[in-house]
Length: 194
Image 1 (cartoon, one colour):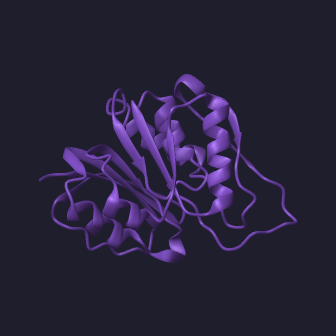
Image 2 (cartoon, helix red, strand yellow):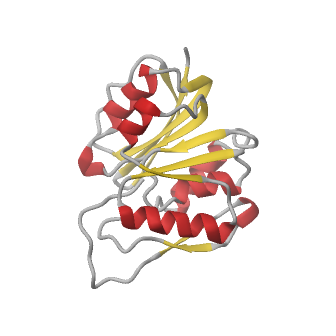
């Protein structure tokens, strides 16, 4: 869910604001990394309106957690269990601090998302956030990895955030449920049908 380039020591750490649920309005520090940015408030509002009846008691994986905006928002809105998967050490440290600040039981994993999907025993998941750094173009391999093992419950949702010029070749098990374009970003919500 983040766009990363390289650290920028001249810039101060930013903040992400949770927009709903138990921790609505809480501001959390994010890592001081150039190009790391949370999904915008309006985009998150759209997404969580789509998911408003899906989160209570759910098991959710945020595969490219970055700032944690999506996974922590899901936790704030009633997800029973959230896994935040991130490989950058500074981002992981900020995620752990945010989880501590919220007194959340979200599980922060320092890992490459694709490797984690190959080895995790934490599934099946009710929902998955797929918002990798745009330049890495990891959407296709991530969707394929989700199908390689029984990681999704039937009718699980998979949220994909990508640039508008992304031309997806989505496996047939993922059926498009919702779509919205905001500027140069497209939001897509898929349903997994086994």
